Length: 395
Ligand SMILES: Cc1ncc(COP(=O)(O)O)c(C=O)c1O
Image (tube, rainbow, N blue to C red; front, side, top):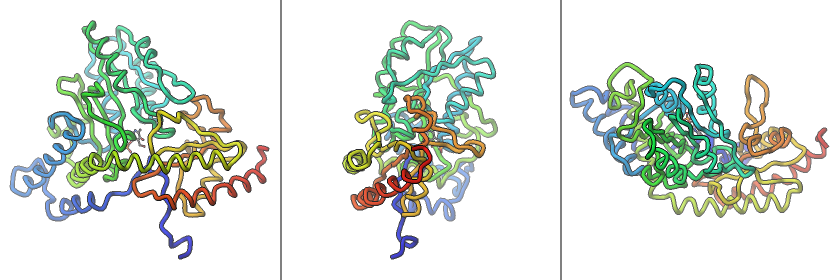
């Protein structure tokens, strides 16, 4: 088999995952056979609403909440926008204050910056060099006008896991003495496959998910909204989703997302164990065999599928392209913004220098990653790094 014919070794699961065949099979009839609009009261529409109800139950079971607390959205970008804009719209306060971290996904950070221009106060809490937030800093940042704390559960670039349940406790305590209650949100997009997402244990009022990050389809997400949480809808039109989010429901997507949560809860423990073993093999072998390579982020508080490694004196882009030529898909520590390469804000936030951030590669494993895949990476990567270093003007 030539390299072009071989299936790719896909190590970019934090970007997206393939739809699980079982998920796809469950979705399929809702495109062509049961195509009704769930808002229609005739029999065709009822078929669709029954399927949506079942998916809502699957997600509610997974999160340990009521079905009425699940709002389906178009993805986590929408869920996170909904949180920030919706909580602020409902807050009856002069100059509301939000607490977040410096390592959130751009859909949180960009929205916060947009809100700052409209007079909202935002505190961006720093993280330590491992990428972990000090819970005391959350406590210290709380003010009289704080309306929302939003902290990412597990980071999409370096896989660092934040102590969400501990922060939940801090907010619960603070709320006992306050009239204007602080609302607590977590972006659990990357956590869902590996960590307990029970909303009661986490102590969150709001939680975001995205279908395509756990073997479900793209273009569908979830916002958990705890009963009684003060949040205004940001999308107006019909009365769908308990009158909290207007728009015709993406029935096949919702059905797929529901199935994906069911499969995730069944396989999570075994999948995590397997991926962690392979991830450790990857990290340890790279650090041992490739000089001047370093792990970005925490070794301990890290998702089982994430290895983010920086290679001194070379560009991650070049490594990524060489690996792609070998049929291996990874991503880099840079983001393309208006045609220029910007170093990752997450790597800068943990104290990695600009040039080193540019020399970083993110490997994210998935449920079908095999030992042979990892061994292939370990075989082709050292000569790539050696060759690029010989050619590098950064020496
Ligand atoms: C942590 C995190 N939050 C939010 C998002 C946005 O999700 P979506 O693609 O569903 O808009 C992503 C996707 O990259 C993510 O990794």
